[in-house]
Image (tube, rainbow, N blue to C red):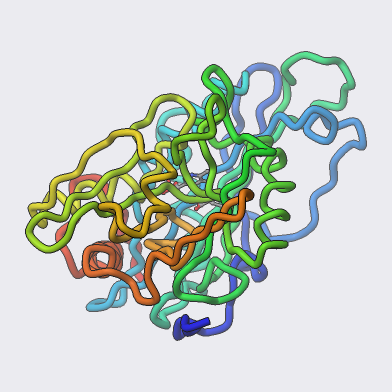
Length: 348
Ligand code: PLP
Ligand code: COI
């Protein structure tokens, strides 16, 4: 393996938590205000509906320590709030009152600002979640819910710590079909994907590369990230990502990369990408990268399939991937002008 582990602080992903959480409850048709509490184990009924029917949604966003000033920058909180509402509606859960998501995230980050790490590649991962906790085995939407926000100082998302990832495409499992829940962030999407993740790991890969459910022909996204390929090189390079047809999660990092690529004058197309094109070493695809909040911009090293096909995309990140990865780091750390609404600032 030619890849080197990235410089990091050894935090990993999601193993350590800050001192506080924010929580609110929904009972009798209304949300309570949220409160800041100590991070400690919760009490819940063995009959809590989420335990049985999995009515649960979550979000993922990050706070970064700015490079220049002692500030903490929360990235795209308002977009996460909107996606959380969309997920809630899809899962028959009550959306939060306007402003509550961002206020809750801000309150937690203010309380635990000292725990936002500063080493390159590190950040505070923020995890808002809503679960059905009415004690009942009835098969219908719950009428009671808890909203929680917790936070975890993190660096590398991938357990291998590799700076480039290997991905595994297989046809035994599918992630999402039209009319399903693939375009929202519900817990069940991830539960249904665990077997595919285990397959990927058994093939020494970091991630699943999901194909379309109907024909297993087009690349859709990675297990926890959206997918981009670069076609052509130098002045002819263009960026392609699958369009959001209802089965793909509309990632905020995907949207950010599209904006950053546009600023660089790159052509971005949202159109189907056939797996066969990606696997063809003589074809036009010169770079592949994954992107998501937890992983950032992650260059793809190699793709394997269940039919034994394999392509090494590159042993080093390609020029377009490197440019966009650097722009993404810069904009999240306050070194590049953000779009309006991208950054919520907290005193460090
Ligand atoms: N696709 C899936 C399935 C994900 O879980 C994620 C992570 O949230 C993404 C894409 C990327 O989304 P975002 O960039 O908003 O984190
Ligand atoms: C994220 O990137 O925020 C995600 O939610 C992906 C994964 C941790 C589930």
